[in-house]
Image (cartoon, rainbow, N blue to C red; front, side, top):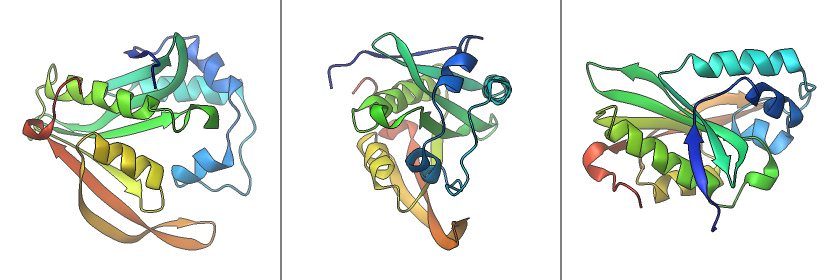
Length: 174
């Protein structure tokens, strides 16, 4: 848990890093993806991913102890209502369960409620993704509702949880 976590802007070399981590069933499933036929690593696909990532109002590469391990982004920005949606993803199973995501989410929230001046950040998480739910709750997110049977994954319906946090609920730097 003593890892140094930082966020930085995406750079061209991140496509190669993304390419070096082949899709893994557990991570794909947590995103709600189909695990029966995982895509093969493809550098062009990784370059498209990088360009897509750069298209968000706040998209950062998560750095752990000097190396890229994932991405975090705020999307669906509504400037009038001062709100956005958070999404995060780590590249490999070896990065899970180490507190990396929790620290990255907190850094993203510091930016959302600080520099961006947002009032609210929400997210969606599949109800079976207990690891992510624990992470989000530890960062101050509250379960606000359930969209029942919202995701069809490998022949089964799963609920989607909506979780949110308001600016006054966020404790910077914790």
